[in-house]
Image (cartoon, rainbow, N blue to C red; front, side, top):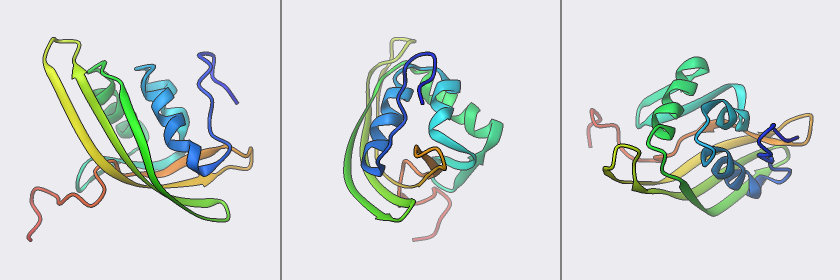
Length: 137
């Protein structure tokens, strides 16, 4: 399946982070949302899960920087049609407003293969095990 901008979804779990990067780098939140299941969760900040229109809005905030993402998958653990993806990622460059940007993390994500054979996020947790600012050590 391709969107009108030719963003290809992944047919293998290990390729899903690269599908996210292709979609992210269009800077279009509607296109990026294609890599998610409809009821999926995106965690833009540790301890702050979002879904639905909030997920779309939270991803839009990252995309508004207009700085591309680079992904380096570290591990893919798959059990049938479910996968745990551990992915290093980096958003680094000059933002649309001229400011320097460097945001990085190691994601712990869950993806599922749909009936159509394409992988989509169920949980996109880009900051992985980073502590919530209000959590106790």
